[in-house]
Image (cartoon, rainbow, N blue to C red; front, side, top):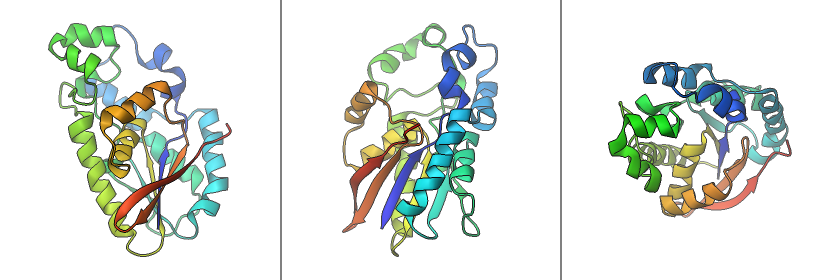
Length: 224
């Protein structure tokens, strides 16, 4: 009974974020920026190759008829569509529980613009990123994202009452929250590891459900 947590394949934002998406001053509103992030941002050619690599390795890892979930963001949905071209009927299923952290009005703001626009939030953003709550309807990692991750972990555990594999296509920040929950570790500890090196795009984290608890059993990273 296995849970596979997969960060989406490389997106155009990952590849060109500081020359394309983060402009100072930002040329669009927070709401427009979030819509762009959720619905427009797709995969790079490298991302397509990473997703094709997933298509080659997942059948061996996941076995037949896995339960597959994706976030509602295009880059995760596209990764799943390429990685699992012939899923069982009704799969994959999109769920907002796996969405990227919602940065609200701060979406695609540079740090300078963010600190100038919201000086009262600057200290938390600099020193306590996990509790920083994005302005304008956004969420924090420690509350909103972690709460969603906990709901998804419960959903996955319910799916795993029968021998099968559950696959989750999600995003870097949500992976951090899921790692904290599934590995029973504090968010700052996971974030410290992420600062040394983020989980690569299209990497697979393996968890086994044993005695009602998840155990990390390995990581598979793409050669691309």
